[in-house]
Picture 1: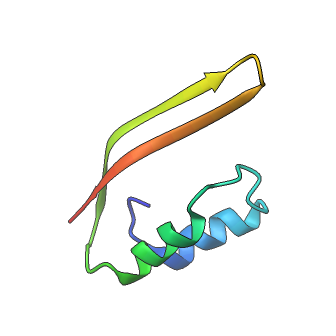
Picture 2: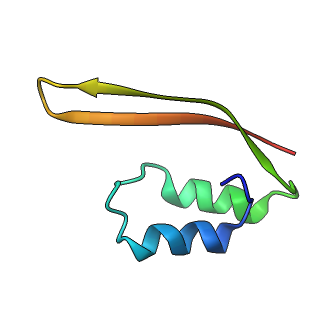
Length: 65
């Protein structure tokens, strides 16, 4: 995402058959394709693990310029 390359982003996810189950894949791809930004910067990354149900979710905040 930091490269602001919608096609490359989608190809990288497709190549592994979306095994991470990315929520918002279409919205993120659309954002990357529609923005005039030249670069992205990671602002925050974190994750939450629900060990009882064997689930993990990660999330990130990005800034695009």
